[in-house]
Amino acid sequence: MIHGILVAVGVAWIFKIIPDAPDEVPNIVMPRGNPASGDKQKPSKPSHRSDLARSAAMGATSPIILPDPEMSSEMVSLGGMAAGSLGGLASGDGERLSKDSLIACGPGERGPGHLFFDTPIRAQRLVYVIDFSQSMRADGRDTLMRDELSKSVKALPDKTKYQLIFFSGPAWVAGDDVTSNGVVHKGKEYRWTSKSLWEWAPVGPMMKVDWEDSTDAQRRKSIQIIKDTPLVGGTDWETPLKMAMAMEPPPEQIFFMTDGAMENRDMDRLVRGLVATAKSRNIRINTVNMMVPQKEAVQAMSDLATKTGGKFTIVEKDGKVRKGTR
Image (cartoon, rainbow, N blue to C red):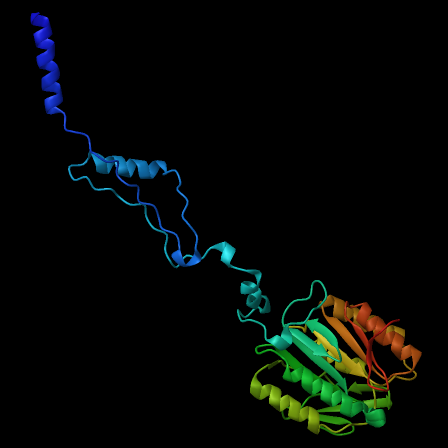
């Protein structure tokens, strides 16, 4: 009996000194989703770290519940970065390509898109090597060439590196002063000698050609030069292409257009040398045959393109453009 009384007193004393448990289970604070997106935040199991924080808070004198840290509103999910969001980086300058430059090109090509006589390419550095010989007067070739070249230059994206090299017998940079056998480039005169209309060579070192930056002002200047440059006698492909390929850094792509065959020249030897130089500098040569009928010249232009990874295009007498074949 005495033992029962002691047990009862002990139980009553224990219940008296233990604090009452909280009436409600505290709410768990979860990071809120974006109301505008309509997404509902699904409940997730708290991490071990959050459990420790809550346990510590509940055991403290002040019953404070520590919330989970919220994600910064400035964080961007990878899922929101569509492929188009990175498109501008492909040009190498962090800017999006212009509408005119979004051209479907072949595998492995990179940089802004360019178009000349329906020939699409991509390049950060591009050289036009264009025939300005007297024979371009026939069949309105020079008018067609000037129109297409002007359109191509006008569409160049900003910050593209480009240059225009014109040739007949001599070769020169667009804007130079030209005579039948001499060129004045940046105040320096370069003389040329010829064995025939189709075989010309510079006297002394070959002219060094610099890059132009594609800006609105420079493009307008180039287009005016294209319009005003007169045609000159002679036709020799070799030196102008060598001048283009010798540029530093080298061009990624070349547009080469001519209407003339070079008579009494070893075209196989010429093509082998040009192709070897182009491959050694990782340059693609895209050739445009402006109504050239001679089979030897057509074959040479086809080989220049196909053996350097470029494209071969034929412009017919009615102005129609078609993909070239061997």
